Image 1 (cartoon, rainbow, N blue to C red):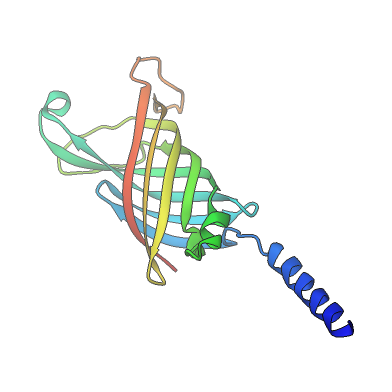
Image 2: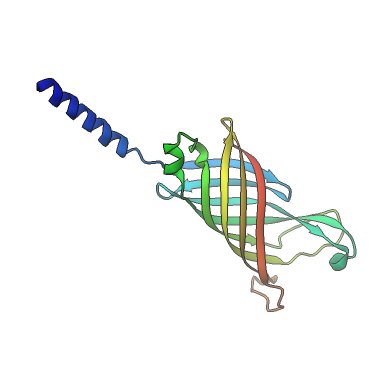
Amino acid sequence: MKKFSLTLIFCALTLIAKSQNTASVEKSIFGIQTGLLGVWVHNESKLSNQFALRSEVGLDAFILSKEHFNKDGLVFVPSITLEPRWYYNLNKRQKKSKRIDGNSGNFFSIATTYSPDWFTISTVKDVDVLGSIAIVPTWGMRRNIGKHFMYETGLGIGYGNNIDSNNVLTNDKKGGVVVNLNFRIGYRF
C-alpha cells in the first residue's frame, strides 16, 4: 500500500509539473530579414506568453511605372514599423513536438508602418516620394530553418495615407486600401 501511494503521488506531481509547462514567445529576438521588396532589421520583445511587440527599421522597395514617373524603375524608402503580434498556436505546436524557438508559429498582428520622406535610393533620377502611414491587420507565419535562419510570410489588408512635408495627413484622395503581401527570409542573432 505504501509503494502504491508513493507511486500515485509521484505520478500526480509529474502531471502537475507537465501541465504548468506552457509555450511562450521568446524574451527578445534580434535579426535581419530580406525579401523581394526590401531589407529590414527587427527586434521582437515579449509582452506575455503569446504576445510580442515587433519593432522594425528598414528600406521598403517600390516599383515605379511609366504611367506615373515617365520611366520604369525601383525606389527604396526608409520605413519604421511597430507591430504587436499574437502567436496563437504555440501550445498546439509544442504538443505536436514542433519547434517554437525563435517564435516559430502562426500569428495575427496589426502592423503600423511610417515611411518618412527623409531620402530615397532610386534607379530613376529626381524621384520625389511623399511620406506615408499604413495600418494593416495581418495574418502570418514564421518557421525556422536550422538554428539561426528563418522564413516568414504574411498577408493583410488595411488602410494607408500620404503625409506632406509638415507631417500632416493629406486630403488628396490618394489614401486608401493597402495590401501587405510578404515573403521574407532572415537570420536571427
